[in-house]
Image 1: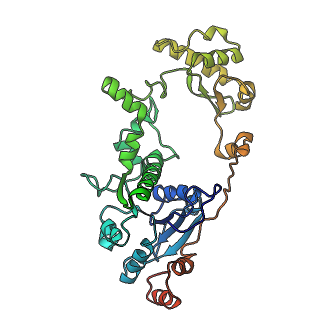
Image 2: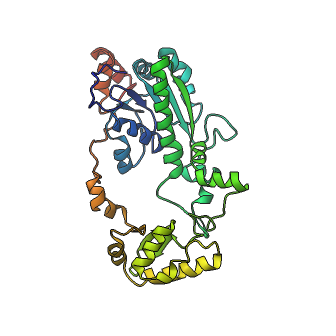
Image 3: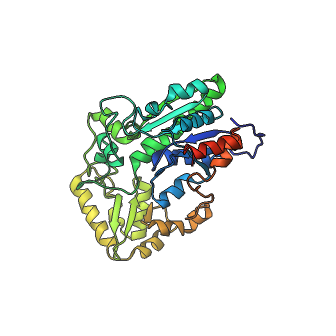
Length: 368
């Protein structure tokens, strides 16, 4: 860790230095979470295409980082990275298994210059196993892990703009493991190699389906589970203007509050009856009720109630909602994402490189 005076107001990870060699979403987002906690995250990109995430994603998942460009295919570039590793606490990479070793920057090479470093490898299917070298994206990891089978409704799995496998199985699993390994390294002086398989991680997050498998030997099919459509008291209902409301009245007290606001006392005793025909009858009643008025009407009707009914907002509407404004959310979070190589000179100077060394590396194309 870098030397920095500790104060009660210091960010939790102040003084922690992280080398982020990842691209796109899972790795950069994991490293950005640590940057938000105060870590000095250095985004390491090659001198060619670099991180090819689109501009919007790049900004969101790389804010609060510094950036350097290094050509690891050149011996001088590799030597530069290993020199930076001497003072780093974490290196996180997201290449296919074996790539970092072929470049000469695998765990053994990095550990040789810094035994206390935490080396985090994020890949789709992990470093070992028959699928270790298989390509994939979020949809593939979630599908193979049995998670896509549990996201959707009776009509089948649903595509989502919230990549659960990448974020839960990749990013947040990596964050947890890096923090734990950092804590262990502060006590033992020894780092470790973390093997984060995105498919593994998202499978481990499937708590409710896994509980069902343990209980009965199989997960409930879509449309038959408590949260996937079996209950009238838990679901989305279309409104008159083509929008939707979300009903989450799983507990009887919330269902009673819903029936009271709707002035439908006759439905109060038809909560989670266990009878499919009754559930479908209640669902049809709710469909007809909510379809009669626009979403704004229902939002106003249930405001301040205990019914667990909320409007389904678009993201831009959510960011403008008084609650999220009061909680400090903004469409433009503080902190800028760096341009590729923006801090190359600064980072190398801070690592003890002389002006002549930096000039030589530039002339050789080892840095950008």
